[in-house]
Image (cartoon, rainbow, N blue to C red):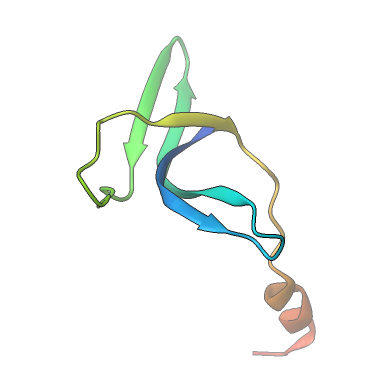
Length: 77
C-alpha cells in the first residue's frame, strides 16, 4: 500500500506579517493506493467554526524532514 495524497481541510483564516489573509489548513488523513483500489485513512475529524461542510482537499505528499530527529541521530540511546 502506497500513500499518494494528504487529505486536508480549511479550518479558518489568519493574517500574515504583511497583513495578507491566508487560509489555515489541517491535515486530517491520507489517500493510499492499494493495488487497483484507493483507500482513505482519516486520523482526525475537523472541528470548524460554523461546522465542517464535508469537503476536503487532496495534496501531493511532501517529503518532510524533522530537524530535531536529524540533530539527535548521534545520541547513543
